[in-house]
Length: 579
Image 1 (cartoon, helix red, strand yellow):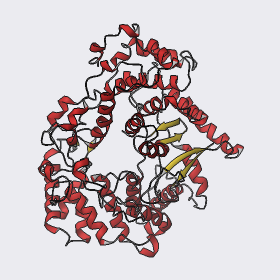
Image 2: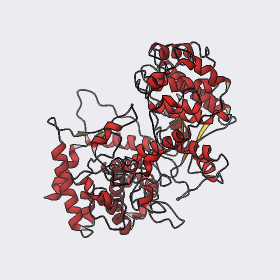
Image 3: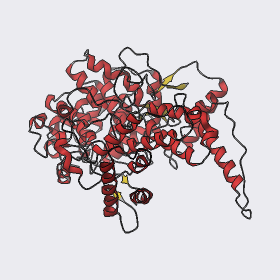
Image 4: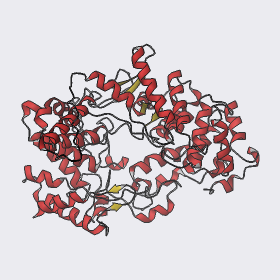
């Protein structure tokens, strides 16, 4: 039986800045759980399997079941039912709120955050198993991964880019290959493998896969490197002043293409096993030696870095430091095991949870829940690394310009302080949560952050709009790029949107640079700390408000680029502060 373990370490190759606060790891124990527990878990899995084509996402029932058992001391009020002809009273609303908050408290982990699945993409898991081809994964992992891949196969036989997607060549080839690497035969899976292979061949074969898939298949030995469009590592030698320098890319794009350039430069190919030789026959409509690799070029981050370390030296310290963190990216639910797109969304979810609980006006009644959440938020901000608890407490070590990094001291990450990357909206929401908690009695929710920590957070937010950058701060060379008033995600926008014409992903759009969007949380800070960088904060809010008005659509929405949906309510609160 699988068990979710929170904030635990134990591996000599693990490193942490905050005693593993927020870390989520699933471990399999064959002796864990009573017969009743195992029957309940089987019931969750059976239900998902029967309804997988109508509801493709899991409900995290295994995690909920475990946490609710661990938090049995929390009582949940009886349900309030209001008839259609009845008036909704204040008491019934208050009871419903208390019932919801009590239930939500049962799902809180002991270190104060709310855990959950951050999966969805179907192309993450194949990369890991392609890398681990020469290893022998434990039986529990193998079984859970196979279960997840088969459960998420579409009715037409293919697999999508993500769990809700129609079938794509990228998702189908990588998922099919993963099942083969995990031991499924070409005709196993009660017809699943034949259906998957038929979809691939009917839609043009693996030569139609996009660039990320070409790279993984080339590393595996099931696709020739000459079928890849060039990813020359020499591009990193260009002067940074050029707008096409990779250091100007969005950090996610940059961290994908840096290891891809390395692997392309090495033309690395793993061991050619009987399974790989068989895949060369299964994935193409012509014999492998007859594939036109020149034509195939244009028919259509964690793991990659770890693979590069292994290619360079399988016994290196760098590689060994990667290995124990693999567990942080695994997640188990009733649909099997999958890989998360991040090591979680702990900080993001907890910040919103705190704000929601306090907004009900019932915060003091749920003091124990808020106290644990307050501790987590305080220990997840990035602050100076002094060997104690972690917020993103300091900038990355070394020369930030050399590593193309932005300042991070005072920021909140998306997940945990050990991840550490500063994000504008996560910092803003963490700051808001810490501010509203600071207004509650400390004997109920614990001691607030000191003013210096709040100042550090505001400094990061201002820097992500390009305001008040110091001469010794990374990003001075990019300071004018966010002059429109918006905030980019991780860093300042470092180049121009026209760079998308050389976007080599062939799968995603608007990923080459970090585009600006807006977050107005500095307005809340202004109330409590009116003296800190007053003119810059006011200028920041004014520019952000103007930015929202500029990008607002006729229907009132503000949809910008890939996923940056800006809530109109932020504009109202921001403008109110300006008045």
